[in-house]
Length: 296
Image 1 (cartoon, rainbow, N blue to C red):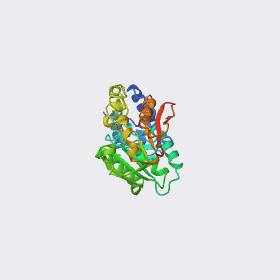
Image 2: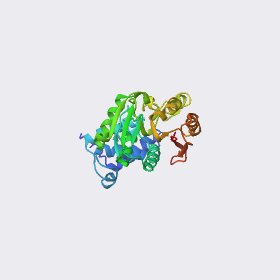
Image 3: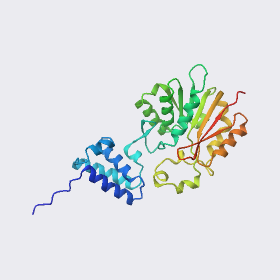
Image 4: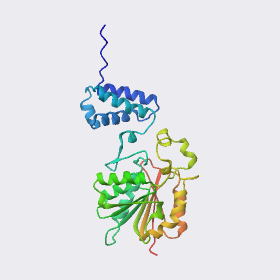
C-alpha cells in the first residue's frame, strides 16, 4: 500500500496554525510573532509573506520553522530567536546577554535629541550612555546627532561586544567609544560630558517574579533589578552625576511608571540642577526624568 502524501504547508496555512498555537500558549502577540518568525525563517520581510501567501515550504524550511515555533512556545522572546530587534529604525543584534530594546525607550532618545539641539556650545558635544547594553540609545543618538561624540558604558563585557558589533553594522564605529566598568566608577578621571543618558535597572526586585515569562526567565536580571524599591541606581549615582557634567549639561534617565517624584527629589537634593522635568511615554505613563545642571 502506498503511503499517503505528506501535508503541503503554505505560508497562509502556517500563519493560521501558528497563530492558534501561540494563542493557546498565552502569547498575546500571536499573529505578529508568527509573521516575524516565518519571515525570518524564509529570509523575507512580512509584506512579502502576503504577496507569496500560497508559497509551499520545503521540508527543510518547515523543519527550521517548527524549531522556531517550539522555542517561542516556551516563551523565549522573538528577538532572541531571530537575533535582532528594530529600534529607532535601526536593525540591532541582540543576545540573551542584553536587554531587548523597547519602544518606550525611544521617548528618552527623543527628549535627549531635543535637548542637545538646543545647546549652542562650541566644539563637539559629548554624551555618556550608562548601561548601553545593545547600544540602542547610543546608536540612535549617533544617527540623529552627527556632530556628537558618544561614550557607551556597560559593566558587562558580553553586552559591550554586542554594542560594538551593532556600531560596526550601523557604520557608527568611529563615533562611539565603549567603556567596560561599573557606571561612573569606570569613567576616566577628568572626563566631562554635555549629557548623561541611561535606561538603568529600575524594576523592584520582588516585582520581577510578576513579569511576563519572556522577561522573567530570559532577559538579563542585571539589566532589570533595581533593588528593593527599584531606585538603587538613581540613589547611588545621581549625587555624583554633576561631577561629570559640563556647566549647563543635562541628565536624561528612563524610569518606572511611578518613580518620577522620587527620582526628581534625588536631583533636587543635590542642589546642582534646575527643576527636574518628568516626560510621559506613548501610554501616558511616566517614562523619563530630565534635569539640567545649573550654571554654578
